[in-house]
Length: 147
Length: 147
Length: 147
Length: 147
Image 1: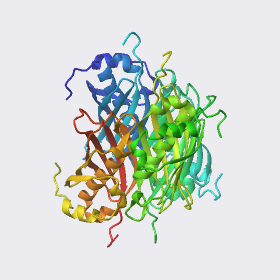
Image 2: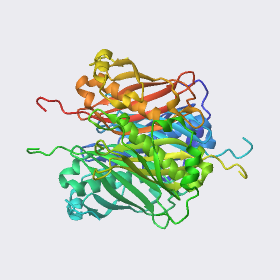
Image 3: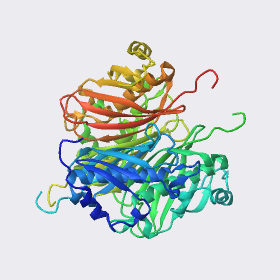
Image 4: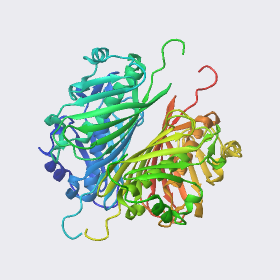
């Protein structure tokens, strides 16, 4: 757990998300935890995420990793960072997830002035060991006034 | 255009995909071209792909890149490669795509025995310059007999 | 070849490099071409780059890719960009290079205000097909005046 | 610390490396720890690793990350894996390292049959927080007997 308090609460975060992004209707992400630079987000199992081989698809894991890291970024910078954009992402797929909920544990490695870099480990409920590992970089919008 | 003939036709490819993967109901990918190690795939604009800022989302670009490269892999190895799995993917987001169809031009850089590596450039219709660049690696299933 | 003229000449570039960086004594890079957002750089074969299997090492390919892309960045932004720093790099190794010179063809995919993204393809002299493919992102220092 | 015993000792590892690779004369890596799927490796500060800005260069951090992960792979698979080759690597640079020794803590995330994926965190002695984060994939040579 991080030393500092989160700069955004789950309630603030969810208020921002409500209705803000159409693509969240595809991905029913559930933010379960938000701390300073950390977050836990769940993607519930649904047939629409299943790829051949009866397993949760890579794109769904990538979407979850990107989203969970973005939540962690908001926890580190506050709601001003809600307009942060992903500049790049790298994922390694480690093992099959099966037909299970996915959970991503995300943390910011470096909350920089212009860029934030983070990593996320994706687990599938009931599967031992991580199913994917994500790193990503976010461009932080300049603070409006002064700062 | 590559020297060799594609090892799979668009018709063969679409026959395989029909009903094969639930996640294709989220992404209405249209494979427009398949050659030996090359492919062009379109993701039609739809509200469900839109993120805050009124632009096509990063996850949709990643999903398109991954899929288009997989089509190119099938073009290089034939339908036996339909069970190829992505082992890793890297994406750089370059500019906003707006509310437009996305088109990915994908090509295999190295069709190896165990791994195939490829790159894809994602364009948004009506936007000058690429909106994203993807590289990814696919694990090629061992041939059944002999080899 | 790009539409615009390079914002730095090879002579300007070499003048900057002379004595500027100790690590260039390890890597005898030869910048052969600099254009607007493009560059060609050679790493001459030398025993000090050889890894087990009698082939040029991965770290030498990564160093070459990073350097060549940086030269291309300087071509796009001018010598003010000589203090650009790499924020991230991704490489895929494609085939063995053997005991040969390495040549990287680098180009900037997006010369942004804060970030530049580029890709480089590494060839080994006498080897058919690329031996490595690199993408990297550079943080562009803010212009002194104005901002 | 991992549950299983390392499949290679530091002594075995060093015996293999002695004289085996010319590029190790550029990088004076010191393997400080080898466990099952884990390793700690130091790169001592030297002027030859310094880039403009008086800081250890990115290529030196990438080389260290690649090497340390390879040591961790040897710890997980034994000396048969000494011929494992890197298939891809991703690095994010997080902060300046200054003129200090670099230390990489590496661990294998997934020791697969054909591929091993790992991550490494690079620290600079005396600098708070990681200076770079590396993920990489290694192709594991097939076991001789049985296949």
